[in-house]
Image (tube, rainbow, N blue to C red):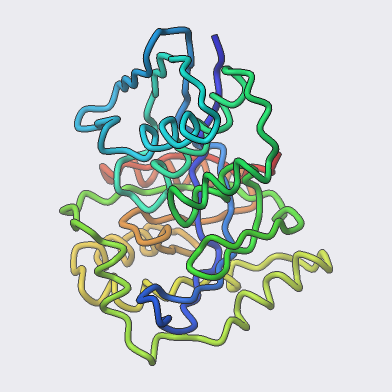
Length: 284
């Protein structure tokens, strides 16, 4: 039996530079994993089977099934596995849960089936599954470029406590594609916000939450009245900063002191909000 974690992520910066000829968008983003994880348990079985504790989750509709099939197709492996996924990460939340689970399946089955695939091959398979799956193979702090498939590891972010807030808002089908479609040229930036954060990380300058940026906030809050209300209310409760996690709708705030984070978490829960306290996670 093998146990492996699949961590959540947040985007510390997310800049859209332009729309590409292939209809994707060119992005620059500093992305960070958290110690808020799904957990996968892999055990022997003749065929490949996925089960989860999460109502509404389906392995056939998830990237995890595609990950297992791609791995078998690439190696000719006929071995099966029973994979139980304990979901902590909410579905369609902007925290990267499905991509992270898929990366964990690649890493876990490569070990469980004793395939011995090199990291380069796993990254190739991950890029075929989705833009950010490759990032989760190593996690930590990284630069994401292109349409999201180009990953460069960065020096770790100074440790931060993170509160994740899951707003009670209606799910937006195809939300990432829709948010990209709402962006206008005035929302495009030149990548310098991300570059400045990278410079600070490399030179070990003090990290400031004023460095955080997500261009999706320009449209997500403008077109999502309830989400905007959550954002403003969390600031009124006392959060020092509030940002959209990826394409949302999850929100997050970063704090340096655990006591301050615990106090804010209590206040959020007293206001009947779904909130979780975690911290930043270094890469493999």
